[in-house]
Amino acid sequence: MATGEKVVVFEVLDDCTRTLVATRVADAETAAGAIAAITAAFTGFGIPALVLADNGSAFTSRRTKGGISGFTRVVEQAGARLIHSTPYHPQTCGKVERHHRTFKQWLAARPTTAATTAELQQLCETYQRFYNTERPHSAVKMPPLQAWRNAAIHGGPQHLPIQHDATVHALVVSSTGTVCVDSRARLSVGRKMAGQTVTLLRDDDHVTAYTTDGDVIGHLHLDHTKRYQGKLRPA
Image (cartoon, rainbow, N blue to C red; front, side, top):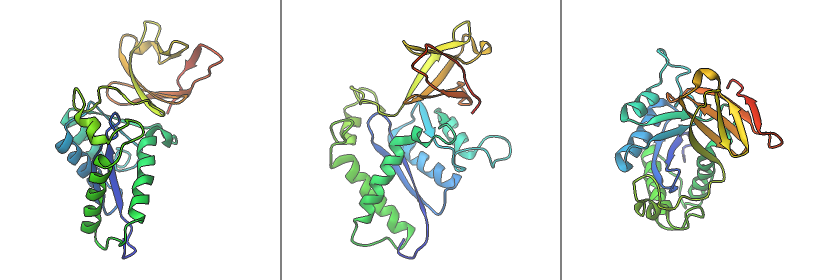
């Protein structure tokens, strides 16, 4: 800010089309700011099946009495499912982190600096329109909003972009308590999970498993020298 005041900007990206579906200025990284951003995303672009957030206090229940955060409640009441990136592994939200850098570069190139949060919000919305419509995104080979509009179903294009970071997989646990990450790697989530569906979030060779409620089961790094990867480590 021109006044020297520090503020934050919450950005919500659609993973498939790279569309910036919401951008909101807040005084700090608060649950209220996160809720405003995700609500704007839901209102403007619909409810996704899955919301991936980092482990910041705005998105988690670590400081919330009763065990569920306000952000979690809003996401789940809307009908979406919330999962969090693995603690101390920020690459899982790599697309958003890279987008933050792109936005900061664009903002730094403006001739004037916003003096109020309202002015900064206006700039954010100008950037959102520019980013979504004015240039092709390298992952989808077209402007993100065009990829969104070309989607057979809202939320994903007809041809998914190549994923260079986190991918999400829904897998049924075998009777022995294991799942196959791919044709070359099997890992154990525990016999008590047999028959249930788990979500695996794979970021390169780092895998995190979640229950259908979005709770972390555990994580591990894949070792490509062996097929059986062993048991998950607690998160």
